[in-house]
Image (cartoon, rainbow, N blue to C red; front, side, top):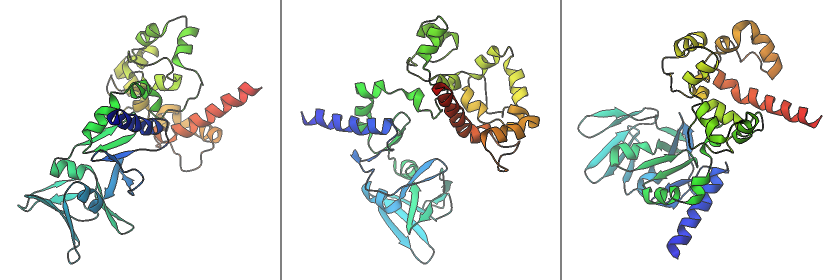
Length: 295
């Protein structure tokens, strides 16, 4: 019974995360979300090095003379400095962290990946619940095997604004198709639920399929929109178009009208990426749709 209650408690917390309440952090299977200060750097979560190190059984020391931070556990020793991504062992070898440690309010902050890469600690990021599991594999596995977790629509959590207010079940019905036919028609994932927003589904369509919709091949649409080399045929449209410059997407001649329509200032130029303005553009479009529905 205690085990069942524990799983239920984990699921309840994760569901709160799944609806956007907060991102949860587990260390050694314990929820530490509200007890530790964290910050973000280059999309990585940083923790106080001493807090996380001691939780994971490491010794952490600070040398005020050369401002070196040392972390040790057993025969493993690592040194690093604030502001530098380089990490050194005691044999003179070094490697670079995913992002540099930094000093915040007197605390040296490091990514959890420092402990993963040097001390073999498991670090799992769960996109569905926006949660981080550090040395907490059992907790993570319990979560993903719950019915509540399986019901979370991961596609609606990709961050795209629900501009049209319609689900793909409604779009499919309006098109005279059932859901499966709709998914197959647009090469969308077979597990995409009917309550996925139209906006989320649209941005999940592959570049090759979008090219087909616009009566182009992949090479042509890549050239027209000047996609970077990282974009391939299978890249999701939302990811690909987010890397396109406004000048290529809407045309430089239309830039002034575009900025006036959506309330942008001089900070937006032809070189601004669509991904940097999409949120505001879609929010304005959503509000316009809501206002028009009231009339």
